[in-house]
Length: 496
Ligand code: GBH
Image (cartoon, rainbow, N blue to C red; front, side, top):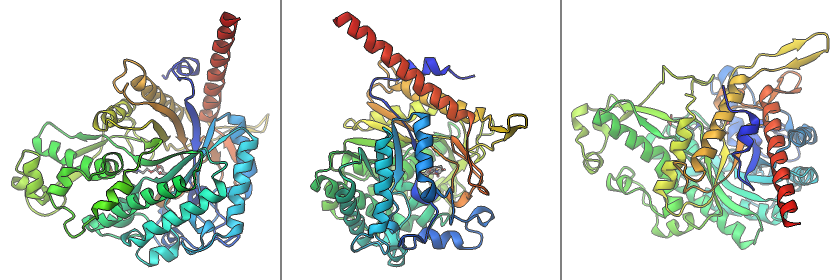
């Protein structure tokens, strides 16, 4: 079971944002309309076998044509805020040069619609849909892409600075570098392994240049960025497993968070000369580590790590710095191996459901980064196969997604308790939680097979149907508002 909506609402501090999140490429469709240029993802997803069952993003949720209806569904849900992303190829069809007016118009309408409905806009500048022309010039391997992102951010600041309440420069650079450039699972499909390091640095530099552009334009909104964070859990007490988990933590978490929050790449990464072929200019670090108004965190799950078949692939200097000799573990292959969680509740993706690690993630962030700005959980959610129950007599549909509902309730509860006074992550100033996602959508290389939505989408008819989790979130927000109104009434009575 999970906590009641009323009891959960009582844990929510004043001013805490409850929202829903999406990303342009996953919901909009209309890839060739109003002057949008091609994205690298358009080409990648058209390749045979790149996406599960060759699902196509061409229509997605057709949000581009159904935006007012989707905002109405958010209004009915009652959320404080909506996190969406601008599609770079709509704004700059080739990734540079002047803005495409018709592309700006769509987001003008979206922002106006949100504000008219009392929903505060949080905008992500870059959520993976790099314009194809930039990918053809090397994408994030090319330092120039960082400057293009800065220029694009300046266009957005000028066009929308008056209405965006929160700016999120980039979303999950770790996933772009790992899946897009190291493993080839995402666009642009490169398999550079450790050779992908320049894409880490260039994305972080792009983030910094975007912050500079927003600050220069004096936008009134708050500015931050989003990293995914997965606590790395050793598979056993075997020191080799522990070191492998430490390596994963460096490669997936700290590589992206340390530069932004401390102005330095982790010492161990530098000591090991992992990326010796690439020199990042010292001056870049000041740009990357500019102060932020908030730090966005996407938490989905922990990762269980064992030493890989090639523990010996760990550079000796790094093993030594971590207090062990990995050369005994063998040669070749990868130094780490991601284990499954057989005993655990898992999502349709196979991701473990471990709300207790939400608290661990927040605690680790608070301990590692003494100057951590206020934190916003910019994404969290789960994919489960949904069952549609039809009531013939009333001709209505019902989707009892109890597992998604419980996932969301348990994770929000864990985050609120951990960051409350006396909680294990009490030093973290947590300001909000955005559910991933408003709608079932195009889940990148998993196509339409991993539904995360509070709203079910029928990808034949494009009809939206609220799931039980939608009604739960609605009830939670209502309970929170009732409690706040009661508190205000008491305060007034006492004062009067
Ligand atoms: C987010 O990515 C995206 O922002 C969003 O677009 C997407 O739809 C949503 O989540 C749901 O997937 O530690 O090596 O095992 C999250 C992607 C996938 C990133 C799993 C971390 C684990 C890598 N996450 N990945 S590893």
